[in-house]
Length: 521
Image (cartoon, rainbow, N blue to C red):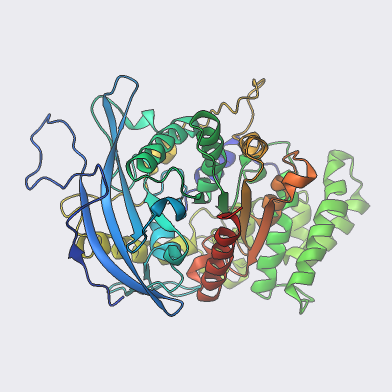
C-alpha cells in the first residue's frame, strides 16, 4: 500500500503543533522599547515599537526570584532601513542581576510552521503555566493558571518569540506575510530579531541558547548556523525538543522505506501503552530496545527486498510486525508491511471506536468514521488547544498588561499552507530534495567546536518519533569528538512532554543541568 504525494504533503503540514504574582508597571522598559500609544495610530502612520513592563516574583526550588516581564514588539527592517515587520516577544529577566552579561539568555519558540510560542511559554518554561488534564481532554473554562515551579528563570533569562504571522507579530509597510513564510525567510527574520535584542540589552557576552520544539528544532539548526556564520554570534547550546531535521523521515514519501522503519518503535510503544499487544512485555524500555533492533535489522532487510520478497517471508514478517504493533497480520499483509502514520492512528484502536493521538499517542478520541483509512484530526491537540488559547489571552492582557485591543494568533494555518520549503544550506545544491537542515547543524558544530546539543524525546510522540531523531543525529557525519556533544533525553510522554507533570519536572532538571554545564565551558 503506497503513499500518495497528496498524503505526504498533508503529513508535512501536520508538523504544526501546535506567584501569588504582583504586577506593577515598571518605570523603565527594555532599552530601546517604547510604550504603547494611548490611541490607535492613524491609518498610514509609521509603525512604532510598543512594550509593557511589569514586575513579578516566583518561588523556584525554595528560592524567591524577582523578575521583570517585558511584553513588547521589535521592528524589523530591510537593507534600506524600511520597516518590514513588527515582531512580538515576551522577555523574562531576573531583576537583581548586577552584570547581565554573565547571565545566560535563552530564545524560545515553537514550530508549525505557523505556531506561536504559547505552548512552551504557558506549558513548559514560562513563569505561569496553564493546568491541563494529562492524557485526556481538559474541561472547558474557567481554566486555572498557576506559578510554574519548573520555570527556567533560576538558570536563564527567557525570550519567547512569535514569528511573523503568529501571536501579535505582523508584516509592516510594503511587506507581505510570504516575505517571512519560508525556511530561509524565517531564519533571516529571527536572526535579525535576536541580534537586535542582544545588542539593545547588552547581552553579547551572555551565554546564549536556542530552545525550539518540533519545527522549532528544524528552525534552530538553520538559525544557529546562520547566527554563528553570518553574525559572528556563537552559542553555548541548542535544546531540540521533539526533533526533526529531515522531513523525509516523517512524511512517508513514495519509494522511501525509512519512515516505516523509523516509526516502528513508536508504534510499538503506543500499542504497549494501550495494552493491545498479545504478549505485552513488562519492561517498556527493554521492549523498545528490542523494537529498535528489529526495525533496523530484520524489518529493514525485508523492506529493502521490495517486490522481490517471497510470500513466505512476507507472511513471517507480518506475524512479527503484529507482535510489535498490535495490528492484525491480515491488515499488515494487505498494507504490504508498510503502514503509514495516519493509517496506524486510525487502525490501532478501531475496535474500540477510537482514534489515537498523533502529538501524544497516550491521548485517544472518538473515531467519527469507523471505515476511514486515515486519521488527520488529533485527539491531543483537540484536548489542549482551548486551554492554552484562553490562558494566554487572559494572561497577556490581565497580568502582562499588553495587547488589550489586539488579536493574538495561536496558530496560523495561512502561514503553514504558504510556507516556502526551499532551503540553501550552503552545500552548492543539486537536484531538489526534501526539506533538510542536517548540514546546517553539522556546520554549526564544526564552526563552533564547543557547541553542545541536547535532544528531548517523548516516547509516545508520533509526530517526531524518537528513533527517527536518533537516526538523524547519528547521520550528521560528525567526527567522534563532536558527536559526543549531542546528548539524548527521554520522557514517557508525547510531543509536548511537559503536559505531564512528571515529565515537565524531568525536562526542567535536564535543561537546567545542560545550561549549568555549558554556560561555563
